[in-house]
Length: 508
Image (cartoon, rainbow, N blue to C red; front, side, top):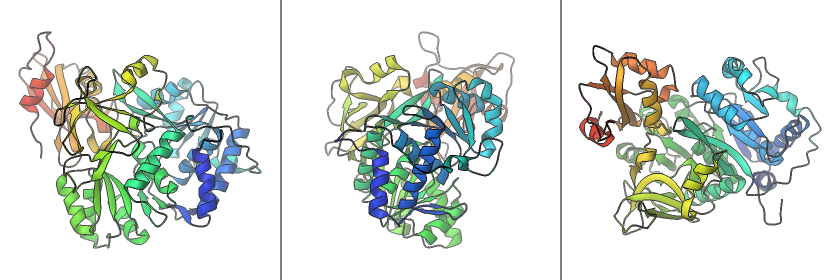
C-alpha cells in the first residue's frame, strides 16, 4: 500500500480507533452485538485463518448465504488480504449459481446450511474451489467457520491499494450470460463518502440492513453506515413485522427501499401502532404514493437516486420533494452526461444515453475485455440507460437503450431476452416478447406476450410455472397474454416497440 492509498481495511482500523466501544453491528436473529474494536479483532483472526488456509491477494472468496455477521466479517477479512469477495445471489437457480461461481473461479466457498445440498450437487463443476465452509455456524457437513478463528490473530496485512479489486457482483444476463462487475476498494470508499454526505450520516445513526449483501445497494448501505460510525441492525431476510419492531426498538434512522419494502413497513405499522418516527431518511426507488405516505407518517425525507452496480450504486441523488419524479442532480465526484448515438452531448430536455466518468465507475466486467472496451469507449462509462437533464440540472430516467432493455421487479435486474429464451423452450410457444409493465407491488412487473403454435393451447399459470422451474423465480412473468398475431419487423422478428404499445398498459 502506498502513501496515498486508503483501503477498506484501513477504514476498519481507523474506526476501531475512533469509535472503539460503540456498537457497529447488531444481529437481529440472535441478539449478538459487536463493537467497532471487536469487529477489527474478529477480522484480524478471520483474515489470519484464511491466510493459513492458503488464501492470498487476488484470490476470490465465494459466499452463498443470507445476511449475517459472519458474512460482513468476510468482507473485512478479504480487504485485509487483498482477496476479492464473490457474493452469490441465493435467489438464482442452481444452474445460474453454478455459472456465477465457476465464472470467477473462487478458491474457497462459504455457504449457509440451506444451500449446501445445492452446492454438493454442483461441486463437480466448481473446479477451483479447494475448501467449503459453513457460513453461519452451526450446521451442515462443510468445515466449521469458527475453525478459521482458532489462531493467534498475528495477521500481516497484504500490500493493497485503492485500485485493487474488492468485490465482484454479477449483473443480469446479457446475451445469455451474467457479467461480473468488478468494484475496487476506492469504488466502495468513494461511494461511502457520497452516501454519508448526501444522507447526512453520523455515528448517531442506525441503519436497518435489510437488503442482501450480494446486492450493491445492500452492501454499500452497510459499508457507508459502518464508515460513518453508525450501527448496522442486520436482518437475515426482510420481514415487515420484524422490521417495524426493530425501527422502534433500535431507533432506526436510515434504510434503502425497493418497492414493496417501504409500503410493507407502513402497512404493518398501521396494524402494530409502533413509533417509527426515528426513520428520518429513506433512499431508493418507489412510487409517489408510497413516498409521500412515508413522509407524512414520519416527517422524514425520501431521497431519490439513479445508479447501477457499475457506478458503485449511485450517480445522481436528491430530495424527492425538490423535483418529484427526477433522480436528483449528479453526485459530487462524477461527471454525468446524456449523449446521442454518436456520443455527442444533447441539449437539456432531450433524451439520450446516460454516460459517466469519475472514481465511482467500476473497473470493468470480469474476463470480458471486448465488452469493457465497448462500454468504456470515448473515455466514458456507457450505462445503457436513457435519460434527460432539465434546465436545472436534474436527471430524469427514461428507460433503457434497445440493446440493454431491462426490467427491475423489486430492485432485481431482469433482461427480457433471458426470459424470452426460456419461454421459447416451451413446445407450445412460437414467438414471444417480454417487457416491463407498471405493477402495484413490485413497481415494475414482467409481462410476456405470446403467440402459440397452430393447434396448441396453454394456460398462463402453466407457462409461469415452466419459467420459474428453469431460472430464478423473480424472473418469471407475473402477467401472460396470448395473442392471435404479433406485429413483425421487416426481418420477420416480433416488433418489440409495437408489441409494447399494444399490450403494455397498466396492470394496477
